[in-house]
Image (cartoon, rainbow, N blue to C red; front, side):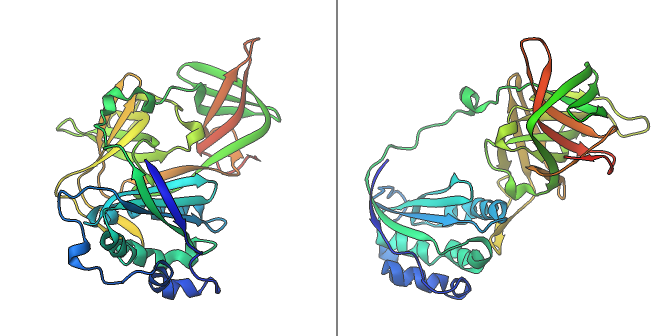
Length: 354
């Protein structure tokens, strides 16, 4: 797609607190729109000619990067409900920098979008999430290609390649090494600096998007359906960790055997499921399922209400014997294993701080 841009001045020049109350009015003033779009200006069904668009860039407040990303992802159902919005994209431009790009057939569709539910949600949370007013550009679409049919099973590049690592119980931790044991044996891994450690933090389904890399612990219901019990959202640098789907031996006296599936996800919701947006966050209805794809196949896993979802993020952790940890490692020419990335999943609360 080729576009021609007309750059606008940033919305607002006053203090940050002003654009919580005046965001929609400022958008209208800066872009010179009529807040009430005429019905005849909104494209009717079948009119899919992309003629104009909007390019909006935003910068998250320090410490609010994850919340800003989740907010933009959660706006997708609202954009889909807009009759005059032909295509809508929320994009990540870099660390803490985001963008929105959307296309329209005419000014009526663009004006309706700028005074719609997404603009209202942005106005309500802009001061909380973003460090400065958005940079808004009106664009003219010069050329585009039609949306092509996508076959997930034929798209091998989206199926993650496994990365080398050891997941298991920590046996010992030294100043420059860690030893992890699992069913495959004992892994003695040398720690090289700088070491990056990861921890788990509470999250929710709103932070999961198509093609994210996730891990799902599940059990099989009586009807054969896999039911999610816990979901892990991995960062991009750990894409491919423990890739695949394996049965996990149950603990003595515990529930039936469980399964752990790690791979690239597609999110599906049943037709009767509804979504709504409250303060910029989508609340998903019943009927959510996850299709997790990996090198050897895929698993479809049903997500019951209130399932535990955790994110894996960089952070200081406690390394101690007895913890469950994952170390991404490289095998050196002499056969030794080295790591610069360790994820602590759970275990004792005391130990060496990293």
